Length: 287
Image 1 (cartoon, rainbow, N blue to C red):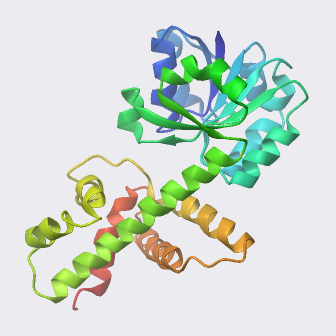
Image 2: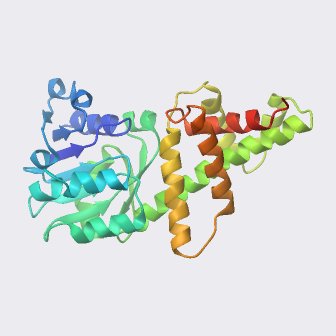
Image 3: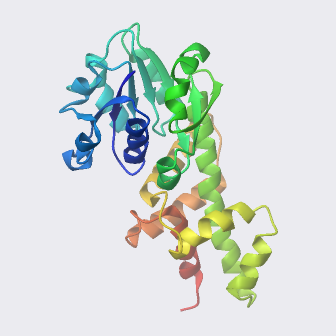
């Protein structure tokens, strides 16, 4: 099976590497050519444009930063849509709005089958092939590419087009908002004179246990960064946008987004999103 992989960021690079190591015939493309360095020596082909990458591929995978990037790489000049074979499969693994996923499926040329397959897990899990892959689209198409996706993690069919994108937005909404809850919990602990270790021990006995266990080490720098804050801001905007379109309010998400904005003004946009918890503590500490 010939595979094109477009988008070699912090997630795309280890994911594409897994496919090369699994023996697939892989062609890669990235907007910044520097990111493609090393793939040629590992047996992959490097393409000059997304269209060229897609030209001979049975499956084209995109892993890009946001909705605009996906639409540009698919439908812009030298885009994937113009280069794909009409019997190929497009698998977009980016985190995008459910409506964008549906629009992409409807805009692709006739004959091209489309899946969305956003992932749960950061770069470390991507390198180990342990991502949780949420897949939306036709069951038959999912079964066709399941072995390919399994080289990167554990694929699970969620439902029709748009359903996996919705599941990923919901997942990230909860992850991001709970970091702010953790931060404010520590503000309360500080206000009551509790030491940090005691407060964290208490929180690990609550529904925040997983958040404290996974996110606090990233907030302190004891664990490597996994999810950039600027991307968390984008994902929270997807959640807020979906709610507004339905006439609903997400009060906690609005507050979490404001916390992220303040952290990013302090230069934390490239840091792990968990660092917002420390920013919240510093915002409210006595001067």
